[in-house]
Every structure is written in C-alpha cells, then in structure tokens.
Image (cartoon, rainbow, N blue to C red; front, side, top):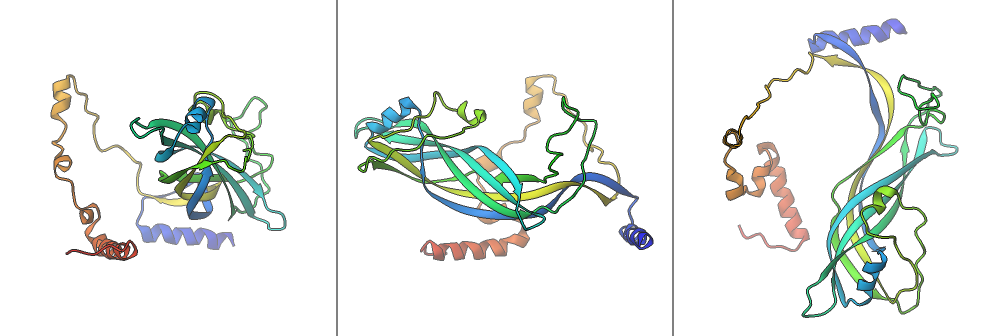
Length: 287
C-alpha cells in the first residue's frame, strides 16, 4: 500500500519535470457554495437621534450599503457525520436619505440591518487534536477540544435596491436586539432604540456570498523554485522624482468600452450575455 502511494507521487514528479516535491501545511476547502440572496424588507434599526428624524420624515431613499461584520458559528449536524451547520449573521450599515419637506434638502442618517442565514456544508471528520508553539495562556489552542473545521464567508459589496417608509398603523412593537458585536456598535453614535414608533423603515438589499468550510491539513505539491522577487524596490528621494515615475492616466480621459475589459477569448461570451441581458431588461439593441 505504501509502495504504491510513493510510486504514484514519483510518477507525478517525473511527468511534471519539476525540481522538487514539497510538503506544505495549508487549509484545504472540503465544501463550498455560492449564493445570490434577495433580502427584502429588512428592518432598519436607528439610534435615538436618527429615530427622531424618521418620525418627522415624509419619504426615504436608500443611498449606500456596506457589510460591517459577519458573525459565524459552526456546529456538527446530528446523525450526519461530517456535515456541519454554518450560521451566518450579517450586520449591514445602510445609509438613507430622509426627506422632511419639499424645499428642505434630505438628511443622511445611518441604520443597522441584520440578516441571519443557515448553510449546511461537508467538513469531514477527524479525531485528532493539534498542538503547536502558538498557544494561549492556558497552554491550549482555541477550538482544539471540539476539532471543528473553520467556516469562511466571502461577501461582495451589497446592492442597495430600495427603501420604504412605513406608518405603524397597527402599533407593532419591534423587539430589542439581543446582541450586537462591539465592532458594529462603534460605527454608530449612541445605542439603538426599539419600541412602538409611529414610523419605521425597511430596506431591500442584494447580497452575493461564497461560503466554504476548510480544515488544516498537509499536502504534497509540485514545486519549481522559491518565490523570489523579480523587481527592486525604487526609493524616490523627492516628490518630483516620484511624480515622474507615474504614467499618464490615459484611461481616465478615454474610458474603455465594455468588451475591452475582457480578454479576446471572453469577448464572444460577453457579447452573448449582453444581448441576453438586454432581452431580460426589455432593452432594444441599436447596433
């Protein structure tokens, strides 16, 4: 068994014409998924001063949305060995333009929107504990007791789609947020208020994410050489010398067209997608 295993990698070494085979310690992705979520009517939470502005507003327009933090929790699923539940809590900062009158310029305020998502992914299983020289005060690394894989979420910039101002005619009372990370609260001036308000705001956001589960493992890879830098660092001794090294920004004066952003190989696919999207958006191709 071991001889066949060694012979397999020796054949790879010969076929690749490489200088060496290197064993590396890295994080291997066991499972991943991509998602396109349409988050409709997310409740917006405000501080006390901003909520007073909402109470006297006549209209709202969404301005910008950014992801402040994603809180991740991973737990094994019962009766499904190797599968894990990844609970992701997204915290969004949504900037809104509140209109208080026709002749008065809109006032920009910040709000907090929260979205919870559960994903099931395969993360394999292992019954080992890993210790290294990087340890905490107790001499043990964090999360070694459960031997859980690591969950990672990649988030693109959200799309700010729309916002609505509602009159609370039914007298609904919005529940208080249980836990907000400190990294989120520092972006707002004051604490969030919840209760029975006459008006409240909801926002609709488009979200693109990639979630994957990874584990630390050892792998044998083909290595050609060390990654040495090919360029020498240039040290400009004066501002004039530094400015001389900067090329003229031609693209700023002559913006490239859409096909030029892609390579020649992708231009045909890009043109087909443009035509397809035009049909979906009910646009007419002019030329």
